Image 1: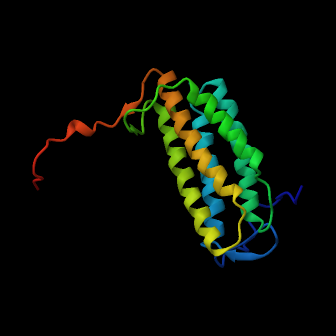
Image 2 (image 1 turned 60 degrees about the vertical axis):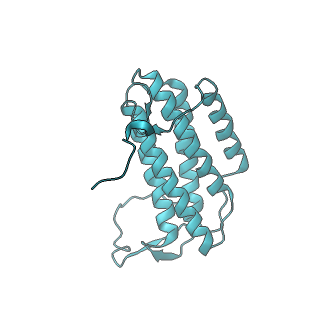
Image 3 (image 1 turned 60 degrees about the horizontal axis):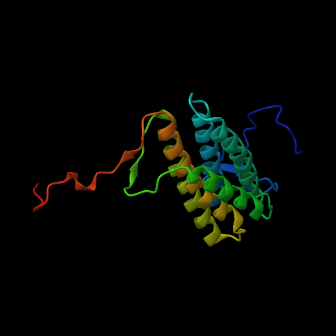
Length: 190
């Protein structure tokens, strides 16, 4: 285990730079810092979801594992050349996704974010996950990255969508379907 922080502020970042896990320094606005910062934001958003009453035990167990994975993923992004997320982690997400999706009815319409507080937080986590994925893709265009972080985030956003559906249904709020037929047909007016 690395050094533990005994003092929270160091003043070394006052110039707009930050230290990476390998000891090098980079700008706080670099693609790498944006990527692992958004993974941290995603982890916090999942923590917010877990703090809501009504999250089922199965969802809670899956998301706590995801939080550990995201901490590893952030570490991998913070330490260039490090490998902490593996194909087996992606496979586990796929298996978990399949288990949660098994009991859901097939989708016939798009779903709007909502369906109760827990489901809405799940949708928020999904959108943060998609942003993290975009930032990892952008980083991968500039620097060499392994494929597993991008694969993990792609599957995780799918899992968060399915978990949001599960939570909307289990809360009794139900899913909020997009009503594409709600608009009047005819010429647009301004």
